[in-house]
Image (cartoon, rainbow, N blue to C red; front, side, top):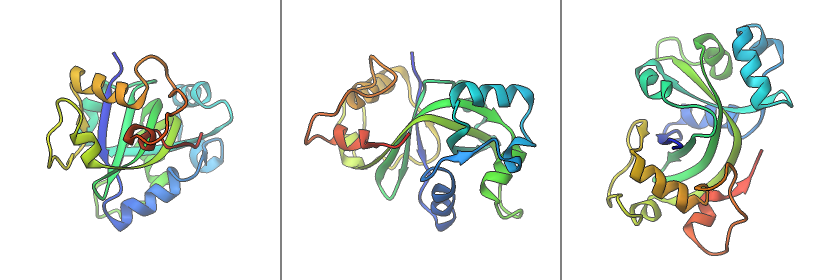
Length: 189
């Protein structure tokens, strides 16, 4: 069973800046800035998932370590902000590398730091209001999806089916006019 995570990622000016740095564009992880802090295993995992040497990245703090330990290649993340699903990503690999996170996002040292770095092997921008998710079976109106949420099996299956990801790693060509079509968005990988 593929896991599904819903993660607020766009709510603050700092988050939007980090989004622009590592989600709106592909990051060349072979560049010395990133490459010199990767372990051999991390480099191998990134190269296997992203043979072109570039990937989109998202991160979490260490308080989410246990949840991230359950995730791996092929799991799906809905990145949210402003009461919208702003992107859908399929995980390439999950790394625990605080130094890589610092180099990707150069956070204020006085604020919490990321320790988990997730690459996306497939990524689609979207613009879907929460109401479309709330309308799905098992979801509740008014849920603002605060904090990193690892969905249970039933909700994960519902989201994967809604996105057209229940049978393959990459969505089928979208049909027109539905919220799921908007969630699948334009492919940007």
